[in-house]
Length: 265
Image (tube, rainbow, N blue to C red; front, side):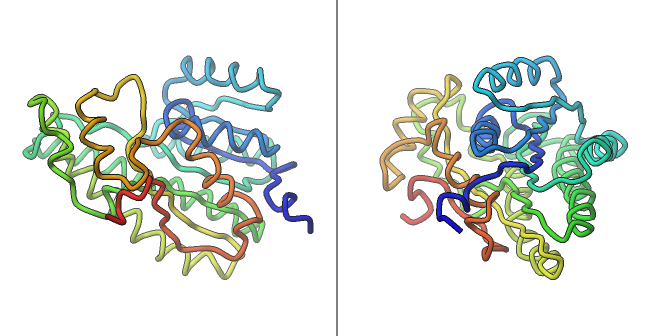
């Protein structure tokens, strides 16, 4: 096969959760650019429709599907709907998560932690299990989880120097717990799904430049990366396409930092 053809997703069906903004949107664009038909799943349907219209303007085929990660029936309906329409799911990018209730400091109320850990862990597992069952029946598929560099290393507290209101962001322990679990679970899942021709890998991004990034945080953060910058909107596209396509057909069980060298320092 021609080397560039290995990266093609023509004729493939891709599901992306959390694909309307930030890193997830970059994933959506990359999969469409490679020729996949995209199902954009989100709890914010109107916002997702706006993103879908933007993506269609580039010639991609996109459908919006509503789902709520805290609701098992909603998750099941999402998977069933796609399988009924398409008969398969070739690529699953799981980039969605819920924000914890009850603040972001070191101490959070138990009910807030219980909710965020349950949804971000159990909801994540349930989605993957259902997609995985479909991929087992196909004997093929690529599952791409979203971890984080915060699931690989501890927090550099000095990233939050200079603006006291940012300090609580250093203590996102439920986020770190969830992302650490995804990294470990990826190896576990790869050992199960591999016998069926299904691959499981994880991308572990670092900080993303956006209009929500405080100036002082940006200045602090870039000092701790080898490349001296935050990620831009394009930096996730190559890695996700690589893992989604046959270009990575012999790779599974990996957690790949996409962080400008942050974790290597």
